[in-house]
Each structure stands twice: as structure tokens, then as C-alpha cells.
Length: 68
Image (tube, rainbow, N blue to C red):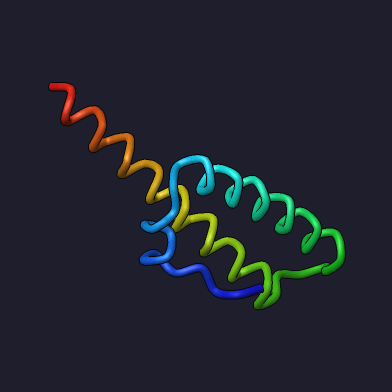
């Protein structure tokens, strides 16, 4: 799995970000099933999920600020 960087996330549209988030959550579940303990793969997936959530939260905040 390739490293998902924040600058790559900013180039994605909202639907693609949501789809990627669902995909990564499924991959994390599969990684937990195959491994008994956390490894480098699960750590990388968790970081990518955190980046996607952070980006989507910042978009929501910007949207709310523009409405005010």
C-alpha cells in the first residue's frame, strides 16, 4: 500500500475522499484479522485514515465559516 500524503488528499474531491476512507477502514479490519499485533501496515493505514478525517473535518469547518 502506497503512503497517502496530505497534498495528494487535497487534490481529491469529496466523494473520492469518502470512498478512500471506507476502503482504508476495510483494509484495517482485514489487517487486524491477519495479524495478532499491530505492525507497520496497520500503523500506516491508521495514519492515512487520520489524514483523511482531518481533511474532511477542515472542509466542513470552512463550509460553516463561509455560511456565517
